[in-house]
Amino acid sequence: MSAGRTVRDVYILDAVRTPVGRYNGALAAVRPDDLAAHAIRELLARTPELDPARIGDVYLGNANGAGEENRNVARMAALLAGLPVTVPGVTVNRLCASGLEAVVQAARAVALGDASVVVAGGVESMTRAPYVLPKSDRPFPAGHPELYSTTLGWRMVNPAMDPQWTVPLGESAELVADKHGLTREQQDAYALSSHRKAAAAQAAGLFDGEIVPVTIPQRKGEPIVVVRDESVRPDTSLAALARLKPSFRTEAEHGRAGTVTAGNASPLNDGAAALLLVDDEGLAATGREPLARISASAVSASEPHYFGLAPVEAVRRALAKAGRTFADLATLELNEAFAAQVLGCVAEWPDLDPAVLNPQGGALALGHPLGASGARLAGTVAHQLARRGGGTGVATLCIGVGQGLALVIER
Image (tube, rainbow, N blue to C red; front, side, top):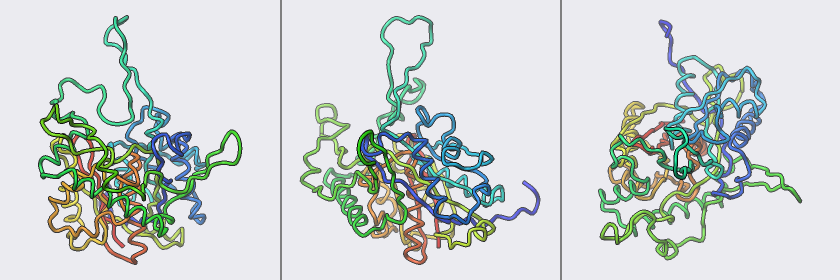
């Protein structure tokens, strides 16, 4: 770094996302690189004053990387979006927080003067995640080979890892529930509130400013236009949620029934998101008012099997860096991987006003397309602050294997 280099302000000029599709739902036919390209293309179309050649880099988060998004999906998406071939791209992976990590890294590049304009975001198609067949350690092995699904969670685990660290993600949520004494009823009630808030936000058009519809050609007839998040269930109820069986623990195995179900855990999803980050020079080149400004970020780590609680420390660190406290928050968007994980974090944030938590619903209802979710959260916070006319917000996620990431955004 050159002597005397100053840290620049970083603005979120705009933020878009696709609707979040259900597993094998409306976006199932769309490749992840095309999905990311669509988000980038639509993002830039909303700022026609910007010469795309000014973009210094494209940062995209992706948690899988084993399928059609292989070979650096950020670069592929930039090319597919029609950006000049001189615009580079890099893909980052911090599992569920990959999209937010992309925003953090892109903001850092702008703050240090490495670029004036960058695109940051994330993409995931859990529907199209492939099966993988590992090569054998020895030639011509006997027996049947084993295929691994790359849709979600642990696979091909290193035998040197502590078995406690590699329990299924849902079992980790059960451990959080055990630690904080969270009942099935509490988790179902939280899941219901997430769906109700998301449905209300949809009805009020609160997502309209960030969602860019996806048009999907059909072999026959008119194309399908996807405009809404598919996983929101306005008609769900506590009774419906109570009928679902525990997904990870059985009474026979553990002496009591589990509490984590398909209803109080996030679904499998497809989606993409993109943000346009600029410094003052980039801002002047567009002539637009930014949505918000990036203030601080922080990462933390925890015991891998308690990964759901890792945002607790990440948020505390990020707020301290920004010179803010929980009392300053207008909104806190915490990714809802599991209701137990959210309620566990809230229990460890006694100063948090529950009213500012996920006011438009969260991933339990909206969905969790892994590599895209962090970028979606950052964009949602920025749009919320712009509608309010000011304030401080946080986007944060828990991350498998025991990490948390948080970003403070202000206006």
